[in-house]
Length: 277
DNA sequence: ATACTCCCCTGAGAGC
DNA sequence: TGCTCTCAGGGGAGTA
Image (cartoon, rainbow, N blue to C red; front, side):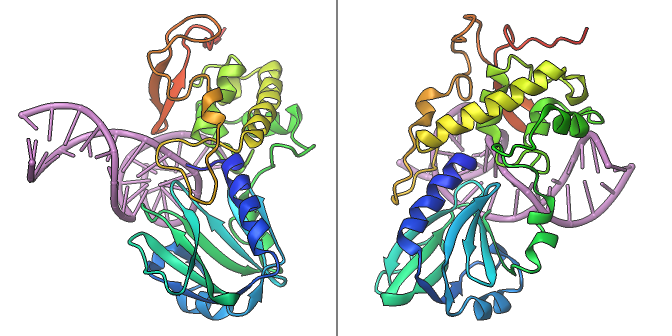
């Protein structure tokens, strides 16, 4: 379940190896991975595209191919592996890119939730996902006023709103819990009830948590490990996520797990108190 | 416009 | 041991 820090780690590793390389061809073994354009067009248009740079936007990995972008969303379990043409195809490899020098970049995804898009740079800003992504967490436009504008008409629990990629992009289920814990805000608090102080805490701790996670190389949790070196250490620094029944490190209360918007949510009911008055 | 629900998919773990 | 059931989860689509 890669969030921004994990996506950045993966992108950096890919960049180290792939700058200047060329996609000779792509083979698609599970069509639903390709969300735009059609599978046939995708295969045709990727041919002989040179990789200029690899960056991220939200949780998307962005391959800069001169006049086009190849966008990849790993969702929960997407991974890349390097192989050669001689290696046998493994069960969960759904897209195989053949590079120059007979090398291959293979996309592996047990749950088949990942998505790829190949789009011209000209169209990209007006097309999903770019057209609907909010601010990166380091953007200087991320201010109390910005959040106020997006929060004031929302009655959803703040936990759900933090996962809304059209406001702040890159926060996922794990870091949302950590950010709310450090901000002493109940995940159940309706978004439009947040105070100015609450919003500023969210900005502060979003930056803090994501920056620390990036330094640690991301979080390795559940099945999300990759032999290409994404074995993040941030899980050692998690304070609430996955800690059901354990003692809160601040007040000694017991961490609870509840469901919010269908997502498992961990919090300390003692120090993340709902303040409705 | 916001806010619901359903769906995609598979493997791990629980329960019998 | 081996079967069946439930759950996890990012985000898009459809509906109220």
